[in-house]
Length: 57
Image 1 (cartoon, helix red, strand yellow):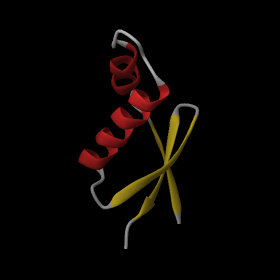
Image 2 (tube, helix red, strand yellow):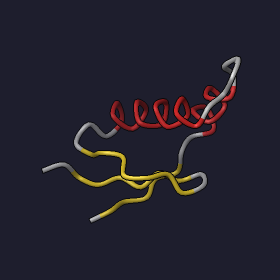
Image 3 (tube, rainbow, N blue to C red):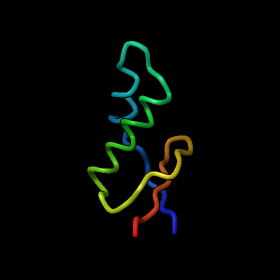
């Protein structure tokens, strides 16, 4: 089952503060945030301002 969570504004803002913001850096920061908040879940995809996560087995 997939769960949708809003990506916090702070995480989005931090990804844009780098000298050359890239999609890869943004995904890495979002993934790191959700790994710390929901360690039992894995990032599947990002849909706009939401992240779709799935429980690991």
